Length: 562
Image 1 (cartoon, rainbow, N blue to C red):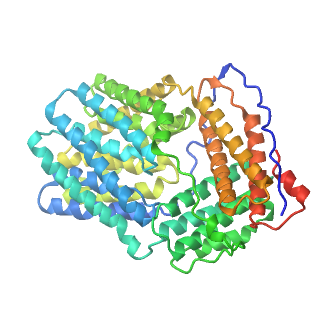
Image 2 (image 1 turned 60 degrees about the vertical axis):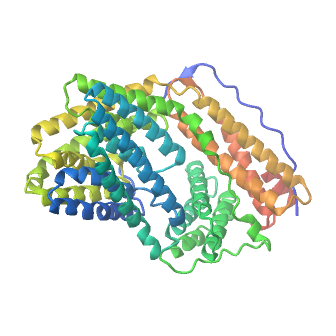
Image 3 (image 1 turned 90 degrees about the vertical axis):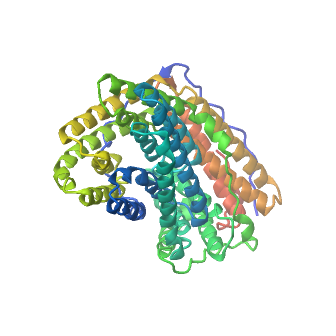
C-alpha cells in the first residue's frame, strides 16, 4: 500500500479589487427541460388531497370554504423526495407552518382593514417563509405555496369568530394531505431512497462517460457530487438501518468512487445498477472489497441549521422589501388584489440575481399565457360549483406535470387555477380579473427584481473564499492521512467524505456568487486548482481504501498532488 505526502496549498491567484457586473441571461430562459422522474407523485397527491374535501363542501353548499380546505390540501405537494420515516416529520412541520402563517393572516385580516398594514404583514411573512424553507431545504415547491396561502388569506373578509373554524378546516385537510403522502409507503417503503441512489449512480455514469477530461466534465462532476450528497442525506435521514438501506449505501459508495476515478469506472454497470432499483425488486450487491466495508457507510457531514441562516440574510431582506414594495405599488395603481403582486415578487427570489432575473421572465411569460388559458375555460367553470372544482383539479394536476420542465410552463396552469380560486367566494367579472392579474404580475416582477438589485449580496465573494479555504484544508487533511502507514479505515473514510462535501459546497458557492452583481472578481483560477488537486486526492484515498485497483506508487502519489 502506498501513500502520498501532504502538499503545500497553492499560492492564491491575485483578486482584483474592482467590482464587476454580470450579464443577465436571455438565451435558454424559456427552454424546456426533461420532466421530473416523479412528476406524477405530487400531481396525483395534490388531486387526491383536494378532491374529497372540496366535493364534500360543494355537497354541503359551502363553496366559500373550499379555499380554506385547499390551504391544507396543498401541503400534499411537499416532501415527495424524502424517505417515508423522514417525510412523516417534514410534512408535520409543513402543515404546522402553513397553519401558523394562515392563523396570523386571518387574525390580521380580522383586526384591520388597512391594506398597507396587510401588505406589510404579508411581506414579512413571505421573508420568514422564504428563509425557513431555504434553510431547511423544504421543497419543491418551497415557500411559494405557503406565501400564496397566507397572502390570499390576508385579503379575505374575516371576523375573529370565524378564525377557529377556518383553521380547523385547514388542519383537517392538512392531516388528510399527510395521509395521502404517506400512503405509498405501504407499497414501496424504500422508494425515495432507491430513487435517490439511482440518481447518484446515473450522475456518476454521466461523469464517467467524460473520462474526467471530456467536454462538460466539470459540470458533470459537480452534478454527480451533488446527487451523491443528496443520496446520503436521503439514506441517513432514516434512523433504523435495514438490509435494503445498507445495500443502497454500498451503491452510493460505488457512485462516489466512480466520481473520484472516472477513467476506471464502468458507466454501463453504474446505469445497470440504477435501472435495477426500479420497482420493488432486490437491491443489487455492490461488492465492496474491504472486509470492514461497514465502516465506510453512514459517514456524512451535516451542517447545523444556524450555519445556513447567515448566508440567507440578503435573500430575506430582498424578499421582505420586494414583496412590500410590490404590494404598495399595486395599491397605488388601485388594484383590488395586491397579494398577487406580493406573491409574484416572493416567487422570484433565487440564489442570485441572474437566477432571479430568469425566474422573473418565466413568471411574466407563464402568467400572461395562463390568463389566456383562463379566458378559454372560464365559460366551462361557470357551469356550476362542480365544474369549477373540476377545473381547479385539472389545473393543479397540470401544474405539477409541467412545472419541472420549466417554471413558466407550470405557471400556465397555476395562473388560471389561482384565478378560479377567487370564484369560490362568488362570481367575478372575467375581464376585470384578467386585467388585474396581468398588471399585478408585471408590477410584482418589475418591482421585485429592482429590490433584488438594490439589496446587493456583497458577501458572496467572501463565502467563496471561505469555501475555498475549507476545501483546501480538507484536502490537506486527507493527504496527511494518506501519508500515515495506518490511518484507520473510519478516519480515512471520514476524511474522504469531508473532502467530497467541501468540494461540492465550493462549486455550489461559486455558482451562486457568479450570478451576483457588483462584486469583486472571483478567484476562478484558484478554485480550478483546488478542485483538480482535491479530486486527485479523492482518487488516491479511494485507492488506499481498496475501492480501486492498485497503481504504481509514483502514480498514486502524483494523484494526490495539485
